[in-house]
Amino acid sequence: MNAHSAELSGKARAAAECKAKEDAGQLAIPLGEESRGDLIEDKTDIEAPSETADLPPGRALALADFGPPSVSAGERLMRLAFGLGVAHSTIVAPFRKPQRPRLLATVSPRLPGDRAAGMALRAGHFYICGVKAPFAQVDMGPLGNLSPPFERVVHGFTWLRDLASSGTPPQCRQVGERLLMSWIEANPVEGKGPAWKVENVGLRLMSWLVHAPLLISPDNRELRFRMLVFMSDTARWLDRNAGKADDRLGEIAGWCAVVAAGLLLPQGKPRRLYGEAGLAKALGEAMGEDGGLLSRSPDAQMQAIASLIDLSACYQAAECEPPQMLRTMLHLLVPPLLALRHGDGGLGNWQGGGATNAARLNTLIAASGVRTRPLKDPGSWGYQRVTARKATLMFDGSPPPFGKHARHGCASTLAFEFSHGDHRLIVNCGGAGLAGGQVPVRIEQGLRATAAHSTLVLGDANSTAVLIDGKLGNGVGEVAIDTREVKLENGAATRIEASHDGYAGRFGLLHRRILMLRDDGQELRGEDVLEPSGRKGKRGKVPFAIRFHLGRHVEATLGENGRNASLLLPDGSLWQFVSGAEGLLLEESLWVDGNGKPHPVQQLVIEGFASRGGGNFSWLLKRMG
Figure 1 (tube, rainbow, N blue to C red):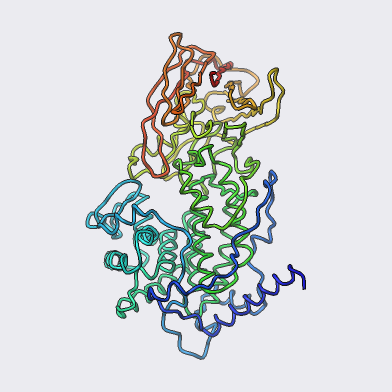
Figure 2 (cartoon, rainbow, N blue to C red):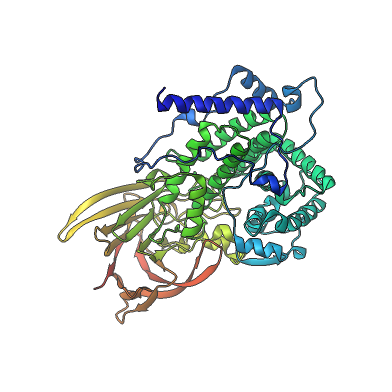
């Protein structure tokens, strides 16, 4: 028997054992701390693929990967019956009494939390986006006016991950039980209030299942039984509502929890089959052809990966082989995320996210078990990435996400970020998705505006209308883009040329941006061009501003002629910014990191009046010495 045949037979044997245990209900394992360490055997890691080469541009997904996992005719009938509302206990054992609620396995979490936030919980505070809030001051009820970050953590019980990272289960259990009882008392009515948004319910049920030892003491039988009943009731609510989330990311969280409940609660095979089909559909509708979510948000990409990591841990705990679809999704979601890393290993500020640091991103990727390289060309996700030695250029070369996908949609078309080594020179403000912590909610829409990004703004208007609730309106409908290598007198460079029509309706002008990064990474040239959108240009002038938000530790000094500025980096290197137009200004700005903390920074602004007949404005960023 060759290695491939052995692997296939091993998988078939594991699947058969899983099916037998599900049907017989033989996966019951006690929740005590003593059993936790010996729960899962040292098995081959099904999530860890071998090292792969760069993924080719425009890699298409096979539709079969997004279909429901292959099942037998009997299992298809089982899934259909469950979808029609037949109880899972009736399907699995129609002539027996339903089994009492219990957990069939204890999960070993793969993804660690924030220890500092966990220690704050043990001290009696929530610690969310840098804000400490005593338990007594957090209204967990349906009328509680929690900001979005607090709502997700409090009602989604994602704080359990942080609590688990702060100590052993006996050390943390008292806090977990206290907060659990407070939440149950504050939410006595099922389906009422923000606690019962599909995404929050999915996150909550998954957190309960993955971190059950922090909530259920082996010695408190009454609380244990009450909690297990509550888990079962929540799972039944999700069975009916997982597909009714506000957006695709919420659906993914809901369906992951349905599958996890099918794995870890008794007689759950019909639920698992039903949930796997729903999850495949939700992921297929949320992802583009290269694995990037259609929200174009790196933060949402990380949340989806985290949900699948928790689900993979549930499969492992239940000793059940996960469907190929799950591994395929993880392998598709990771490379686009890696493509948006700067030289310091952290992410850029795109579509409402903060600048996630390298440590947090590395922890997520390690927990996924996926070992791969960045997507070579993330253009299908809407971004362009160019590297030249120590320099990294990232460029938004796509229209913003559609309203049904956008959660914190930003009017950022043709914006760019630029870093050299560990230092970021040009950034976007970011952080709209973290508003409600240290970032005030009142500036959330401002952080989504075109002016909060390093690009050109016409008439102080957004290239795409920024609406409430994170949605976007009319504006950029089409982006033309061309990337090529060009020869220079002193070497070569990568040239990106793109244009958008976001200002055509209001001002009759198209914005075209040309960026050229020299292959030694020492020079970035740019030109912003305004062209009439019709055959005949309109008369008059319109105010414009080209904004370059500077990195956190960049010290900027304007030149005397008003056309240039010196940029000093922490490593002592000096960069020169030169504008071909008069009116270069140095103004205040802010930059939001991945923890939701805003930092004061500066921005360079080229401003003036542009003719409606068109105009062009060139600039240069060059390392000196």
